[in-house]
Image (cartoon, rainbow, N blue to C red; front, side, top):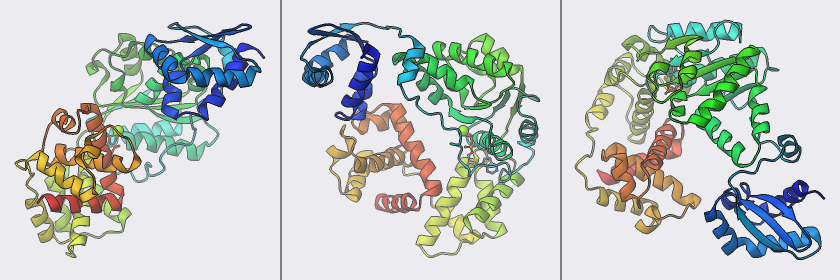
Length: 436
Ligand code: ADP
Ligand code: MG
């Protein structure tokens, strides 16, 4: 058995014995260097990982090798940043992590995208791309503020192409997925695999590319992916919350590549479009609202459609719980009685949230990651930052010193769930009642 095969078998055995997180953190980045009569040398990417392996896993590693080799050998760790393995060789042994071709959320289509003056140019470009992928506008670069429909339109393009030409390899990829895949490919010596996957696509949808800002390695890799795809007329659609020249720390050559296709923006929706969208969302949910009620809602928010949709759902849910019909009057009173609870003591709020979920404060703010703690934590993040208007940093601090990005993630998760998850809608209403 050669070293690579042995290492592969070793990984498979170990993987079954330890948690996926630890496996990923300590073993995926490690590589078998050499095997001799009584010594096995592993190349490990950092001294920290060496320490952990030595302390927690040495025994397990030696036992596992003993089983595979039929003899006992001592394991030695060496810190080695990067040990390139022939990519071809590696590919044959590792199942490529899948880029699922049909992972597009089917909820977002061009048919249910409401068109108005704020987005009709972008919509027309989307249709053109669907008609002639790879040839008319490549890339199609869509930019605009949050919640205006960029992701929806992009997925609409993907779904329409999938429907017309199911054989095309179409992938939607949030830009952090591209980044993470890239970093993982480097760490696990699978760049060949990574390139093969991305460069074989017919349609690549990259969402929120502003996150590439400052990531030099990722940008470099994406530049090559981009050229290769463009060279073979594979369609790319890219979204961003701002135009390329406003994305800081982005390589000029990428900027000019992005601008070389078609750039379109989506603006905040005007009143009539907001009305039309509200009507469409009501119809999707099987709700009926009076024209006056819709007007009231449409005038209460003017930039983000995501928030508008969220508010609609929240109100409908609250009214239902109170057994009130969705009249303009009732909606007005709901809109009025929503003063943010900015003066409520955050600690008190936290303890009430704990009460509600029957958890101790220690559990809620502690490091454990049990499934039953996740939702309460996200709800706490949401309540503290949205309702009590604490900063995300402040919220993180109160929740056991969590990072502000963690808080943002949790808060956004709840924002998203409010739209579709009845259970979460109910929980939030009840929690908020407790705080009132
Ligand atoms: P962005 O990616 O720009 O932040 P999204 O595409 O995620 O925004 O849109 C947010 C929400 O608003 C989604 O639920 C989406 O379906 C809805 N939405 C946005 N624009 C429209 C539109 N023109 N018609 C129907 N729904 C829309
Ligand atoms: Mg988006």
